[in-house]
Image (cartoon, rainbow, N blue to C red; front, side, top):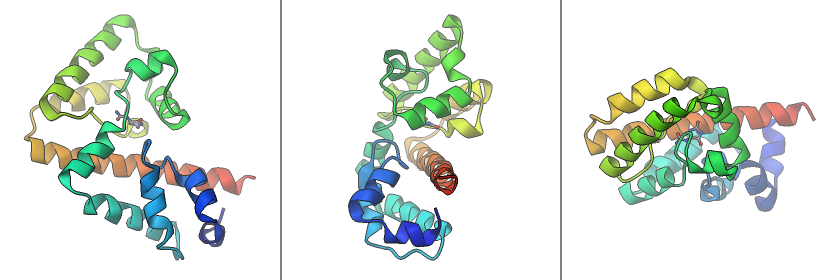
Length: 172
Ligand SMILES: NC(=O)N[C@H]1NC(=O)NC1=O
C-alpha cells in the first residue's frame, strides 16, 4: 500500500486498517484521518505521535490501560488482539514455563499497583529476559518519568504495527 492509497481511504476503511496501531485505541486513527494527505508514512507516524503527545496525563494513562498485561490473563483466555498475541509470541511470552509465568505475573501486579496502569514495552524489540529485566528496572522509576517511558514504548509498538500493515498490504 503506498501513501496515495492510504490517503484515499474512506474514514471507515482507514479506521478498519489502522484502528489498532495503538492497542484498542481506534480513536488515534480516527483523529489523524482528517490530517491527510500525508506525504509519506513517516509523516503519518508523526501525526500519530503528536496526537498521543497532546493527550493529558489521564489520556495517556488511559492509552496505557488499554494494553493487556504481558503473559497475562488475556493471553491465557485467548482474548488478546491478533497484534498483541503475535508480538507476545515473538518475544517468547507464549512459551514461558509456569515458574517464569508466575514471576512475570507477580512483577506485573507490583508495577500496576505502583503506577496504576499495566507495564508496557515493545515486545517485538525485546525477548523474555530483557522484558523481565526492564520491568524490574522500571519499577524503581518516578511516576512522571515512567509515564513518559511507557508512552515512548507505545510509539515503538505503533511504528512496527504501521510498518507491518503497509508491508502486508504491499504483498496483496
Ligand atoms: N503490556 C504490553 O506491553 N503490551 C504490548 N506490548 C506489545 O508489544 N504488544 C502489546 O500488546
